Length: 161
Image (cartoon, rainbow, N blue to C red; front, side, top):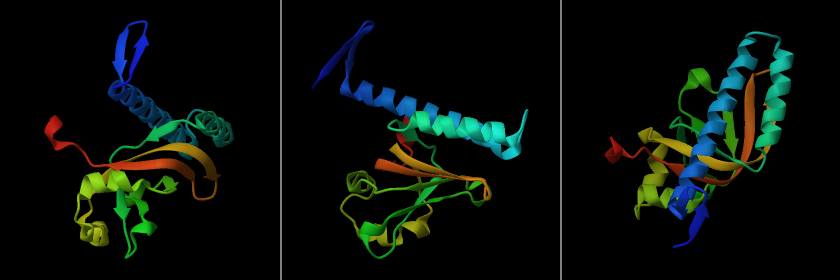
């Protein structure tokens, strides 16, 4: 186990992961908040919020983004063509592209790879985590397209309630 020392005490790798996860969640919440201001045009012009959105995404390059449990993993016949689809059609604002880490999928499905062939039918919601590498803002459709690296997916932990 590797320990990292901070001014306020020792921290393990698990806590470092938690800090990165917390930062990624904060990034997602800030991105969604600014997206809503841009889409709805509150308290100013859309051009102003679009510029802020552009620079926020630019600042987030190389940083982690962690979504809520709003995505469904679609899997066609081949395991190599996994796709993420926003589960709630009314608010399909963030489109994610990139390769999904197969180990995170295996943690969810275990050894039964046949589950992947019909996963999209189950409607199992997942959280998506990844490092921002590229983005595009679609002014016409009011959507954001991001390319993430090191994408992992996670289902809600029902034991933490």
